Length: 222
Image (tube, rainbow, N blue to C red):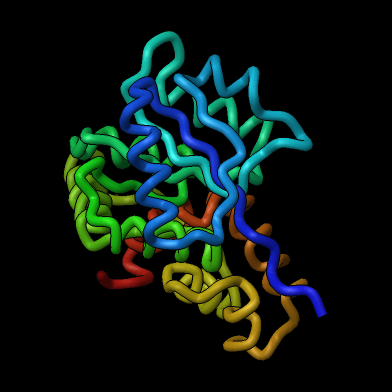
């Protein structure tokens, strides 16, 4: 009986020394990761990634020459949507964090991260598909509150049935989609149906988008 495949990683950062340091840290926290390649920026990434050489998790900076992190994530979303991006950056500005999460990244950590937290982030993304700290959640909530104040009352909300509302709330937890299916006593295929229906109704493209909507409109309290 074969075990779970070893997760593959890649690093995109314009500082070679930092990339090497990250690789050493990754080997310290968990030797069971396979590093596929390193890249200096988004343009270099485009040359090295392929359908046969795409990582499960991509650790990436924001400030990079030629093609920064924002442009790189947009390109990945179009060409390699299955790659999970973990942003590793010194930038802690709310607008940068929120923009990245809206673009669909699966986690956001600071470059001075402790080895233990790096291990937690990689493990969470590999097993649950995302890693959001209290700090990141706080930035999201503050941004949403400011948006509500600036825009006034919300317009008419899309109509959701009770099961879709239940799914929306569970989608804001750390449960995987398969675990959500078990909680709701339905098949994973049915949960996929709930998710796709809400993506269309709420005009979002990711689980982060669902969480943002749920917080903004009071379906969950943080």
